[in-house]
Length: 169
Image (cartoon, rainbow, N blue to C red; front, side, top):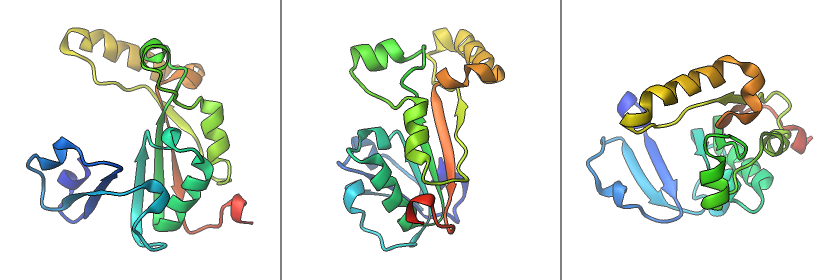
C-alpha cells in the first residue's frame, strides 16, 4: 500500500525468509529482501522511515532491537504491535495458536527509552463478509470508548528520530 500510494517512495519489504507473495505483480518502486532484524544491511541514518508491524514480540531482545532500528532511521519509526489481551483475538491467537503478543504494559516498557513517545490504541480487523457488519460495529464501539484502550487490538507508537533517547543519555 505504501508503494502504491506514491511513486516517489522507494519501499523495501524485509523478512527473515522469502514469501510466495513476493512474486506477484507489484509496483516498480517496491522490492523485497531477506534479512535478519538483528543484522540489518543498512548504515546508520540511511533509511527515512521504518515500519515494524508485529515484529518486536518475535525478537528475544526487543528493546535492544528497537534501538538498532532507531539508529538506521533518519526521521521516524512506526511500531505496530497486536495486544495480547484483546478479547476478540485472545482465545484464537494466544490460547489456540500459542502466539504471545505483548501486553500494553510490556510494550510501553519497551518504548520507554523514548520519553516523548506516546502509545496509542485502535481496534481494527479484516472481517469475513458474513461478519463484516457486526465486526465494524464492535471496532467502532471499542475505538469510541477510550477506557477500552487497554484491550483494543493494536497498540502503535511513532518514534521521532533525531533526538537522543533516554537510553542513550
